[in-house]
Length: 146
Image 1 (spheres, rainbow, N blue to C red):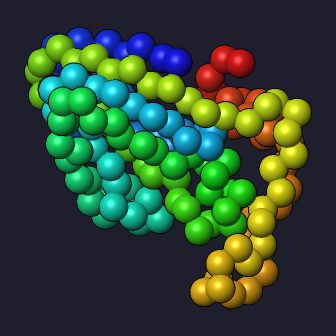
Image 2: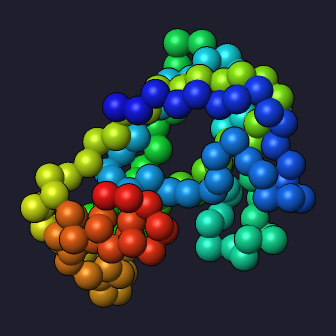
């Protein structure tokens, strides 16, 4: 679980200054509770180039949760469920959120389920990974500390 505090600073998109930069969550599912302050945005299509992306504001609602699909669920479902790219575009107000990250065990082998649904065609889109090894590599690429 993670408690997030965002300073009452206004984002400047032209300068690349955001409350939290665009990212996907690494695990299976994230359950997010926010206060009534807007700022969370989701990308309509993360496959688009950065300059072509369309960002949609998530309306903050009292007593509601936001559920994000993570990278591992995308991999496990062979792309049926897509991890959503999201960011925080601060509007100059103090903002709080609480995130619960459901993640596989670090030793879990994530094996894509192949054609999970009748309308899926073609081969598997993703290779098997051990979650902890994949996560360590992801941290190395992004400069995060494990």
